[in-house]
Length: 513
Image (cartoon, rainbow, N blue to C red):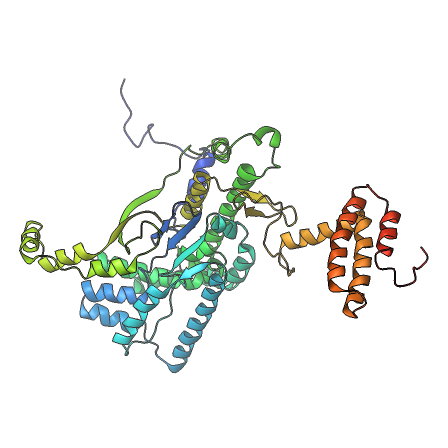
């Protein structure tokens, strides 16, 4: 058999190719010419037995960190150019930066009102930089959560994402860019001859080394955070993982593609919550299955692989010593350890064997460490999948609220059909409103309750004017409740209950029934 040469009959024709659902799934979530979804690497930790997730947000592409990076590995000319590009040229530009910083603080405060957010370490890092460089104008953060450590209940991040209003955010964000896109299209259509000249005027940026690449990525991230802020700050995970979008003529299309990515993820996870956790969803088929079994079935039905890839690291982090009895940090012992002095002779010999200095070895020996298992993630999708897998591992369940119809996290053995969420337009949670409605229903159905309430108010008023002694009223209250329950149970009639109540303090004329 003679094989045909490439370029003839062995070429492939994909014009009729039909992708599988999983291929569509991966394409929608992959980086493309419009958007990069995984620019930064963050870390998530899942402490044992406390059903929380702790997230460490990267600050790689913030101004201060980039300054140190360029100062350490770049030229003086690169550093000066980097600083000058961030220096306001006019007084109103400084006012703009100050207003931007103030708005970012408001946005951060909104997240802090919902989650435990610790930013002191990074704030100290930034403050130290500006104290050492008073000549540099303070630069707003590109990501308001950069450098933060965030703690939230396991599952809360998923709920926050699936109920985020990306539709309104996209409408507001895309409006201006959609107009710019239309104007740009008109310009291109009417000025085709100028396109070649413009390409010559703005040639591709030349990348000569790793530092050039990082600076280029920094500016893409810098502008993208501003362009997408209206959408990303709608939910916690999108704020942690902002995308990098293609700017200029394609900014509108890039924002649209990012919005489509988020909406597809929202639908997927709402489907997962329903299929894997909803007790009323096909109970005759799924009622006896565990959450893990339901999730496996869901993935198989969707033609997804029966596994999830997670990026796990064993991190050797500095940490205070722990008291074995109380399981709390022992700072006294930690400080004592940090002050330990080691014999010079063996210290020098071991340092020589390790090809390091005695000071470096001494520093390493004094520091207290703890092995920490953590997971890296770079996109919203990765964090959602990681959190869901950890929920299944820890048997944490969602339930749909019978009042507002939204899912909520089941807490321990506390069995409730209503969430503690305050729905927009209400001042009390679904649990409180349901309790109030249940009470009113019981009042309406149970004739003994309004009878008891009527006589309670009557005799309480007489206590205030000293017609009835407090001790007598207290004794009466207990007996009246017992009689009320007997009446509710049908052991005595309402008329018998009223006769008894009337006879308790008969110092006033009885009204006719």
